[in-house]
Image (cartoon, rainbow, N blue to C red; front, side):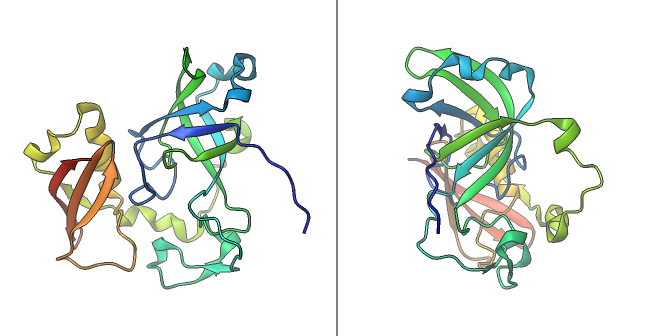
Length: 228
């Protein structure tokens, strides 16, 4: 098999130190805020000239926590309960031959910094902190948006939203600018699809906090928060 050299041009700075709890697709939680920091050899402001004219970007990146020596032609999508197998190329599973991810994010701002050169602030990203990014391309509405598109089994994704019961005293422990994002993450049910025990306490690491919760039916209740 032919090998192709590819370089890491940037890395994502996000509030997710681990992959557990990250939204399954980009754009599901618009309140999420992340920063794209370029590698030293790519910190050239000219490479970003004109990028402010776009509202959204495509990111091509690596599922760095899912790299395997072998690949399977079928996977079990979480949205089908984790028991039904689909072809890997009919899903966005991280377990792929080349472990590449594709995400559309909202460009919130371009900032020139002394420590990291020019960085990009984006919203709605589904990338773990430190994720290697291979390329950035502008999202172009006239060619990238297809209003008649059909989403296969993912068209029912909205049916999985949970009602989040987040006690006010616990919510107040989070920074104000992180609260809506935390609620959005929890509403999309971070649990593995094969774990549905109402008496089990789960936890996600987000924005420097360990958020623990239980799920009974379609209601998720936050039970504790600790600073990491």
